[in-house]
Length: 366
Image (cartoon, rainbow, N blue to C red; front, side, top):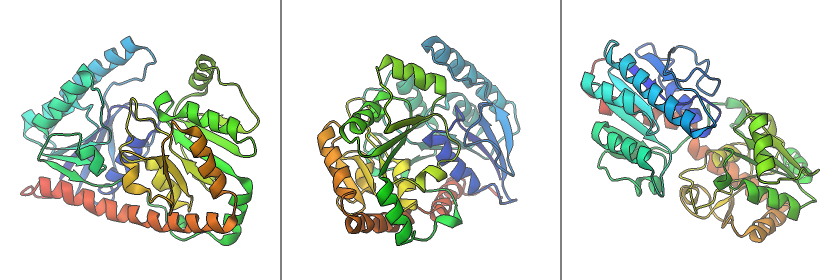
């Protein structure tokens, strides 16, 4: 069976990381001929064994004109590369931004599976066009949470929660000695995109409110972009706040952190899942997350972490103080976090993704 995985921008954000896990569900099986159509940039989709790559011509731009220009170019390139290639049995389109590839695949008679990660409170014209295309072309729509399904209008939806990557070294609870070390270090960690609605300024404010703790912010952006953002938002460097650029591997940081936070704000964006939360669980880390959207389906308030209102920054600070004020309390949350993480193992995820694809393509011979 020939499968084409399509994604607009290959980088180190959540959606290509999830897509990589989907590709790995098929790439080691010789019954599947796998091609990945994406940008020629470094990211989680790079260097996957057993797959072929095609460029969609997309390039990232910091200017609105550049964003529109490269988007249009990439959709045209994707359309022609799909339309004039040998027919793929299925197109696996990651995010709604696959207008060109899905239109061509539909004309060629391929089955189409969309994997959607985000909802849009006030969709712009482009998002409305892309969503309309999803509804018209998709044979199946994978959503990452129940919350996300509530924002869509389709009878083709199924829910598959995201998973952690297949990493055998993290399948056992860390020792009390390691937990004690983390408790003593008091490192608060937040990986996110370089977007204000991700709660970046709230995280900075937390570092000011809690000078006795260390804060590590990981942004999927270059150092130049981070420097410009700091300048625009008048973020003053401090001894207890470090801001890191793109990281291909957060493992060393997760293993030394004490708590993982997600402070997404719901005035412009509602978190639909929270990939970093289950990554925290995998490393036995308690989490603090917004009390709306997908995180409500992941975090058990007062058990493996806390659900909070990110705008109430003083309340967030109090939860951090509570978790790191007593080791027995911290250990209890850490162990519960690890147990919760077992629900998001890659093996189960891979089985569900394969089932969705094979059911959608029923009747097609491998």
